[in-house]
Length: 106
Image (tube, rainbow, N blue to C red; front, side, top):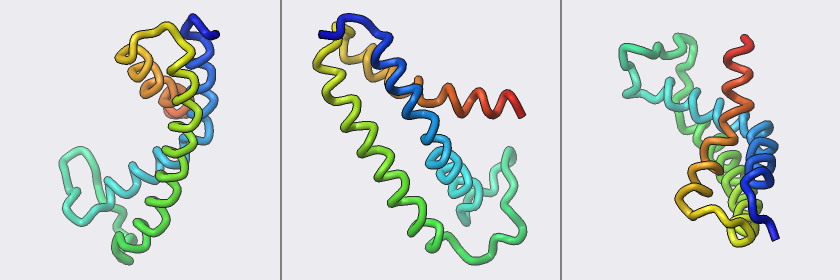
């Protein structure tokens, strides 16, 4: 039985590597949403096809990624000695590490 946090950390960091795709798709959708003209983002000027096409692409990709993460984390949660709050905090932040590394490297 897993008693420590390294196994969930490694699994979630490895899931974060392909997770850059859904994170990027969600960011692109959020920036180009029709009502998203906030001061810190700018819409793509050539994006005039609407967001319905993007929803057809983004929803299945994000749903599949969420399902894979859920199926990987469910058995790990039962085998670790971490509290539920600590475990889910770890499993929500660890997949962001590869994406953050790519952003900092560019």
